[in-house]
Length: 195
Image (cartoon, rainbow, N blue to C red; front, side, top):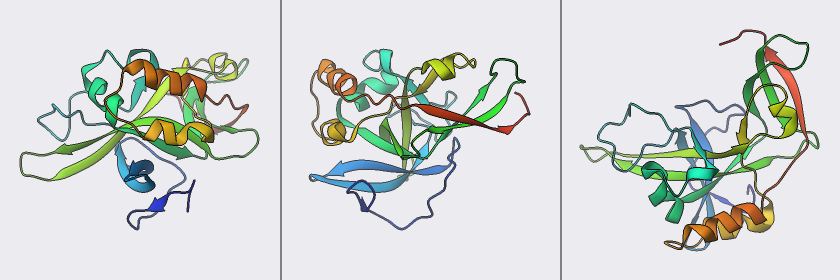
């Protein structure tokens, strides 16, 4: 069991998650944490096409209650995304821009707050997808040229974040703020190629 979660279906866990690929996502069903593969890149409920014009990989914490794509899922479809690391293009002081793997200095698995959607195609197929909530980046990431990072949560608020529906957005902002984890990060260069 990962974070006291039951595996809902068998699938291959990958250490790197890229947009458009499946990743493990933890949700709550009947009071039990369940882990299931969801596609990285939220498809909003109002989309007509499985390949939307705007791909929603990240959701800024500051505007979750304002954006049409997130307002509905923020109130009732919240999830957790376990990560051993994440990747960003950075330009550390005195170095060339490149792709860096960012991970907790302690080596711990990090858990990001997210939102999920179950989108139904005109043909009746259901696509489960998610977006990762982001916040202003930690100083060490900001100083290397990237202004956002995943919104990591402490285990003490996992169940609060996953349960409850239709409540005022201020409640969910309270859970986020009260349970925010601020890990110390390490960075390692993966590639010198720039975008």
